[in-house]
Image (cartoon, rainbow, N blue to C red; front, side, top):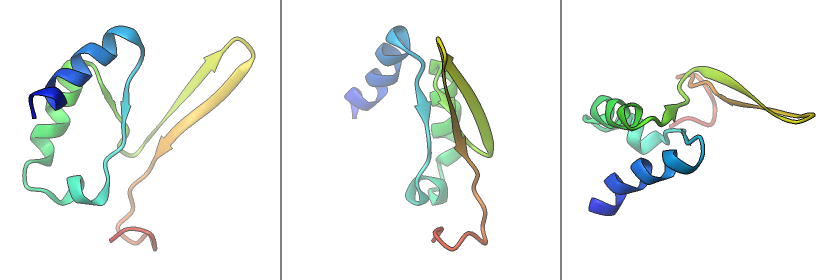
Length: 74
């Protein structure tokens, strides 16, 4: 468990870090604490947002939108 807390601290020193929750994390009672902790370390939590990224002439958009009525959500 210590490694899991250490990873985001080191990772954000090298590159932008993005986190997308799965259905297990989103339904856990301490999800808000997890999200706040990750954001405190500098991790961008993708939750109902889109982040455009560009490198030279290449573009990509990271998106994550959570919908309760989504057929893929549990």
